[in-house]
Image (tube, helix red, strand yellow):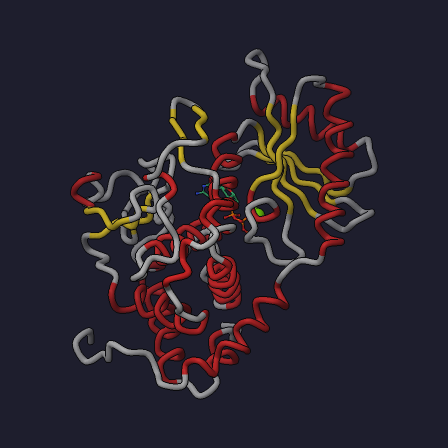
Length: 335
Ligand code: CTP
Ligand code: MG
């Protein structure tokens, strides 16, 4: 099927820019929503500090990485320096404190893969997940936010891809499809590889920011205000990029051998990482290297059934972008 494909996108692709930008704009959260999230964080911080005066709360995930659409849940990390108490005990204690303060549906999920306390703030209607000491997530959130400041097309593409994945049911890690975080990493990598490049490889540049988290060194160039013109040589429009993104994952990615790596800004071989066979539950059927936890394949949730679902969805999207008279309607058609 690969050979017959044309190398170029449809001739009327530019006509699709306006509708894609309109979808992107409709997904941007209102300023008011951001303000409410900050207020919730402040009030949570007060409660937490009564019990643990030195503890800090950090936002991470989509409410802090520039890739949050409106009405997203808020992800919060409680950074606490308590080696005596187990995570579960801290979570149960936390749930107790929050419960007695008018918050609704407070639930401690101590056995989840990432143990959290869930809650809902009845004043703002915001739902929130609090995890403990997941500092790496706070750092990778900053990396994503820094990339987003370099070229506006990253945020546009990622919003459209995330919206597509949610409406098509392929953003569900518990069912073997990819996390939002993985989709954003795929978008960053894709834009690093355009010719000319739209995004640089921040981890390959001079270090201006460095932290060590759980023995992992996280360092990269974070003076992104100096990179605002980085992608200006590349004139590709959002419609072209959406088309090329799906075309890449449908027909060009080498699923058998390739690992995408934002860390290096390149494609590396599964062989180099010893990701060629199944170990435990890691099947490596679609390989997406985490930028900092480089032994983590963000595609590890994908199994032999869901890889088919995922690839068929990429093909469906690519074909719609190539041939459909009204791609915006079809692309986001609920499954
Ligand atoms: N995360 C991670 N490793 C993963 C998955 C997630 O470190 N394998 C962290 C990242 O910091 C990510 C955050 O958890 O930003 C939240 O992940 P996810 O829910 O996938 O992304 P959101 O950006 O919050 O997307 P959504 O809008 O769908 O909530
Ligand atoms: Mg989230």
